[in-house]
Image (cartoon, rainbow, N blue to C red):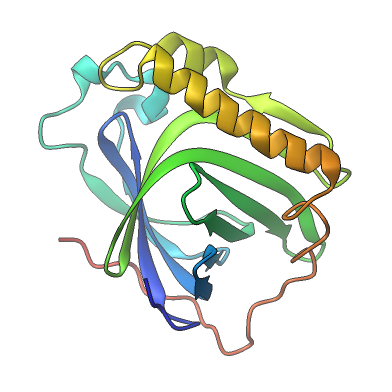
Amino acid sequence: MDHAPGTVLRWNFHFGGQLTSCLPMRVVECGPDGLLLWLAAGSPLWKAELPGGRHIRDIPPESHPVRGYPLVPGEWDAVSALIHQPAGEPYAIWWIFKPGTGFSHWYVNLERREYRGEEIDVHDLELDLEVDAERRWRWKDEESFAAKTGHPAYWSAAEARAVRAAGEAVARLVEAGAFPFDGTHRDFTPPAGWALPDRPTLG
């Protein structure tokens, strides 16, 4: 990868083999250590139109349409995020910023990634960590992660152990106050010239 700061990339989020959203993100830094991205509050996006407004995790894979769910236009919510995708690691660290108050907390998304030119395919692995501003952490979605383990649309028992081990490694960084939980980027602000990007082109 060799993306200049300010470049807009398309972030495609998948769960259980289904594309659930496409968002535009700007490159903050790109190097051998990984990719740092900025997701601005209110960014235009595409999101899957799911039956009954349900969450994708609550829909059995057997019910998914063969061609995928239709995508409809929408907007990212009222928080912004700085996202670190460390090279070779199965997770991303999100610094969450709220308008008017700045840094709120960290979110650790356990995931598998594929890079294709100016697109990033993120395959969510369900289990995550939430880390508050005082570096207190907790698991998120443990029950749902366990219930899906062994299903062919998700992950095997061996893969589940590897996912949890990756989360435990991040938790050790949290407890040690090591990067990225050492205060780095908590005061981040994007360049003033970065307007909201356009909604990504589908296709």
